[in-house]
Image (cartoon, rainbow, N blue to C red; front, top):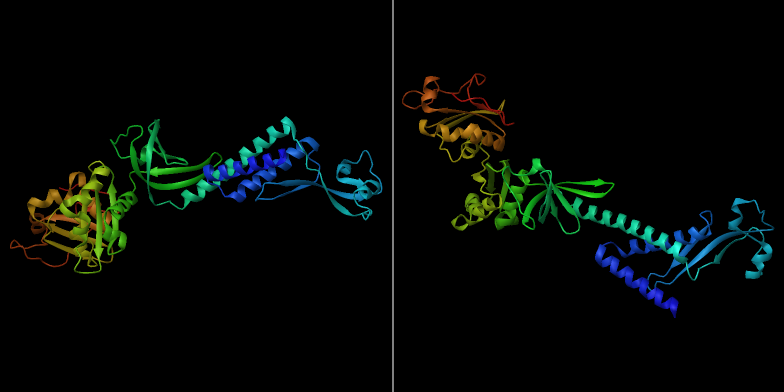
Length: 388
């Protein structure tokens, strides 16, 4: 009756561990079997050869000592513990002969206090390893995804986020400048990387990655989630301004309008999540000249000339739109260049006339051949020069 009670308690513990730790039942039983063998060897010596059979339905188990039958055992033989004389073997079964390998049921009734403590330590360690493996498997598949957590604490400007089974790390350089969070505040982050460490999985989060903006649009805009509208490119200067290029195969669908949403609600929800980061939604076009003009939104463009060889472009805007097209510290032009992957040189109408690209009447004088000396050339990698 006592043994049945132990088995019942054992199975209750297994089921609780499976539910709480979210590890496979097979892993828990494997840990239990290791625990029992470790505890047995703790009392009988690590050199002993033993095995275990456990019924995963009832929790009943038997430990067997694996021995070889010999004529006699030398007292100084270190392997003597794993041997049995013919005489003793025949007491178990008259059919045994010298050289036979036999299994003897040595299941102890009580492991004792020391053995129980050893078993507990091994069990905890095994389950900790299994839980770490389970967490890593769960989160490694979520790299590049968006995740919601609760701000737990902050240390040396690093924010620790409670993700349920594990704590995420939001490093200072992955935080939006000026953004602050209170303990227990809900926060959406981009899963940047999942690392394996000796202390378990390390989940690195980001609030600045362009992928966060992309995932937020996928959550807010049903047309993007369904594939009706496609996100072609996303660039960010986190906390300040971002641009996203969208496209719809169906010409009857307005991809920009879908992202803006009724009364601008969809994009406003994303702006609020990113703490008032300005977002320009532009229409992608296979014609690079059209795409570049769209990418310079909210500025209006008169004309765009492109050179495929070095992926450079020459853009003319009205005089009063020049500062808007370039943006503060060149930000608008820089983001447009990153979004399109093209070098963008922006000139006002007056500058274009002075350089001979436009006639005073505003007509183009033809392609501009030498782009090396153009001021304000904005590299797609984000480098800028001063615009005169």
